[in-house]
Length: 139
Image 1 (cartoon, rainbow, N blue to C red):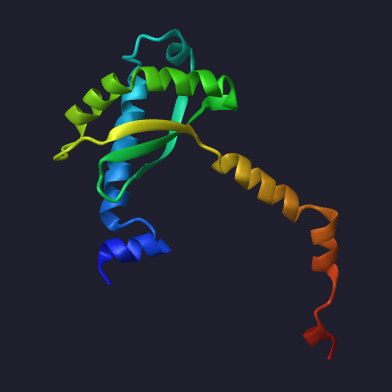
Image 2 (cartoon, one colour):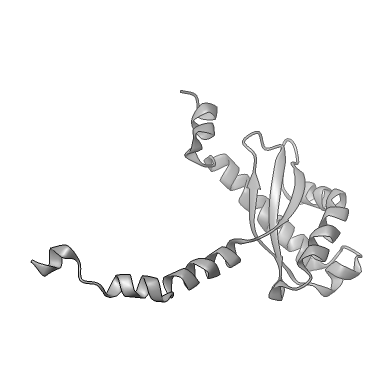
């Protein structure tokens, strides 16, 4: 089975994808921190870039972003989409790749998912189940 087929079977990203994604994440965070984009939404928002996922062919990158405090999320994503050509050019100057991936911006939902799991773990039903003695311990 080839690497490409094994990835399609749910193996996860390759080391190359992870490395390129991390390089792009770091460079994008630097560009956003410098504040070179003249957009009123991006000038007032502090944007974090928790993750960048790259497709196996390295042609497309999904940049997960979250404004600090989680406010004006949709406006920030729309502003980044408007300036993605500029951002792609800036990343091309910072990261040496044969081909700079097309950028797409999405809201990072991992914090919401973490909160949801935390609430589930603190729910009375889970606490009740955790307080029960196991059948093995009863013997």
